[in-house]
Length: 244
Length: 62
Image (tube, rainbow over all chains, first blue to last red; front, top):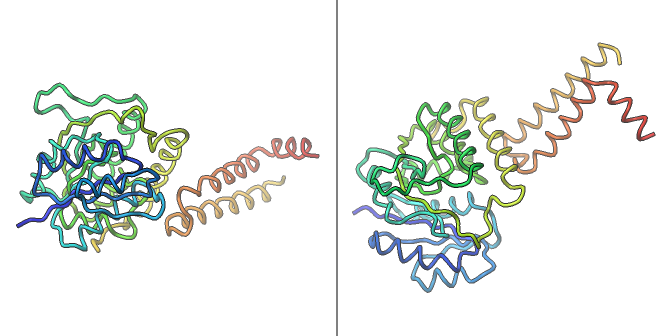
């Protein structure tokens, strides 16, 4: 039987995490759930324990990419065949887990990206719009990443992913980008020979009372790092070709 | 600045740019801290390509 781990990176998510864990459990009761507490200063770890989730803790806030890697390394070390990642603030709709997991479980893809920008296939009318800057960023890096991978990428910044064991090995490699694993990560995944697929999912706006990881000047830092990372990858075409 | 001096300086600045890129690629320099080096190199290139700007700056500083 396939063991599947749901990885939920969380930084100060005491308010939303219990709802996310319960929702995942309601939709996919067979999944083990791992909360990666990324150095929270609130009661996120206690919330995870109370909900009966597995818990991995960072001693300090290491960032989203590191938290994801911690969760995926846990999955590999504990013999999980598949993993899904979703945010701890409830942005990702757990009802869509089935949609991103299915191609992985069926062996049709190694890595499935839940895209908020793909057409609304279920006709729910809930196609994500989001802030203009975010859409522009997704379009820019989707175009650059798409050109480098030779495939259509509508949502390269999505953290709603399903991975099989091959993808887990690529995403936990030492050379993998651990700050913002977005379009650059997809280029590396493509170079490692992973079959990448996008599936339409429902995503919600980030809660208004939550401080975004892209607040203040950080969007500028994100754009700089992503452009630099993609630039270096295009100069170094051998990078990431081997699966560890 | 003579053309020879300018060319030599540009080669030096290009070498520094290559060094910074290589350090980032090898992860010896973290990407999140590399912007300050790129900013410094952009200023260096600007001063090399526009020598009047260099003179104005040195006059201003005294």
